[in-house]
Image 1: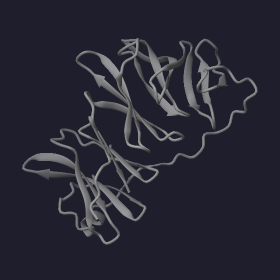
Image 2 (image 1 turned 90 degrees about the vertical axis):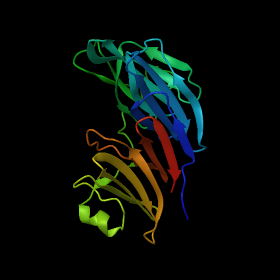
Image 3 (image 1 turned 30 degrees about the horizontal axis):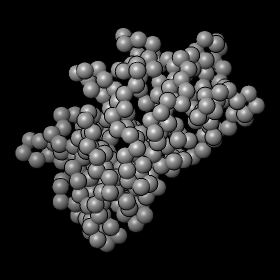
Length: 251
């Protein structure tokens, strides 16, 4: 049976960073318009296949970036200045509505705790880690600092070229460019292939009978080989096509 993406969304500008809120199944994306120095944010409900908000801009414009997504919150960091790419300050955005939940110009992000965020105050030296409520931004003085839980996101691994050839994939992989992940009875492969002097990156999904049930082009006319290919999250195959089209396929 042939597979097809249930999410296929073209964004206005290239994606610079992508994060997944694993508790709420929300894909958060940062895009950047380099010519106009504008950053924007888009969130997608991968559970139900719908856009939550698209191309949202923030008051600090270019001087912000996607930090992390968790607990229904998209956390965005600021920068000290345009000429000094040092992170400074945090803004918490509701990942479903795009509303501002809180902001603090003195905090930097450290990590995700079990139910909250670990942060530190830039003004305090040596660095002291504290825990804050993800949705309120308030300090939790009695909260235990618990390690992050294991992620559900799966990444492909490099494989020898002979492995790809044995799968019967028609495109001939360039040496040392193939990535592979086996999941839920499928084999997902990405590879770079050279044709008529042009390098393209392909994506294949192969079933247990070694049939190709899906094929797509991840990137065309590549000038520099790129390791980025795809991820799998809760039986959902997620990838970007030419850095600006978000695609998700259910495995």
